Length: 192
Image (cartoon, rainbow, N blue to C red; front, side, top):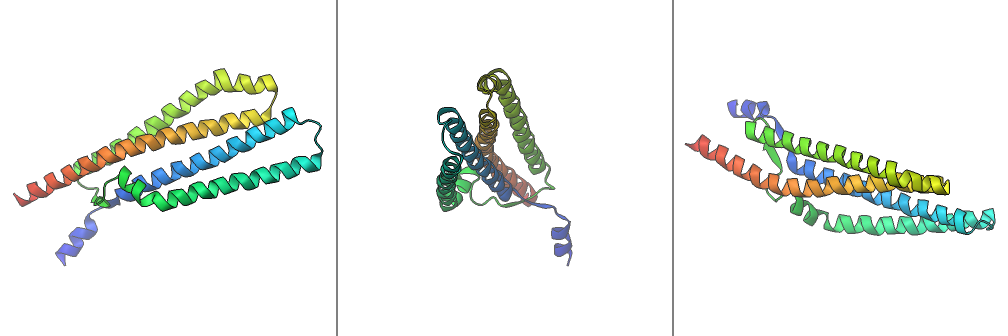
């Protein structure tokens, strides 16, 4: 009975799920942003280089382009689903799923993970803002094109998601090693 109350008082945290869900979310953002970029470039070229095309044919070309883009999305998503377990084991090692968040070292590590991912996200947003302000917005304004502006925003979303995904992979791999060492150290201290 006391063992059950001790296990209920511990705060358990599924760190493996956190890493996997973060990498899945960034991957989905990357796929959607690539689709938006392809659509924006296609719309720009349709308006820019085929101005005399009839409205009916323009709609047909956009529909065919949407179908092709969705097929690419489905292929990328099926590839990701097929290799998601391998990807998740590459991000965070097997054996680390649920950890006791009440352990001070584990709690610090989880907070540091959240802090570094947040800082990388903010840095990525600021880098994209500078690139957008000095290069992409003037480029879109020179053509007076909303499509290029949409392309710029999608490129920013892709860049930020990719940056966060790389950091998740690096931090996740190193964090899993540190968590294993922390848990082993805490267990050995308990046994002594």
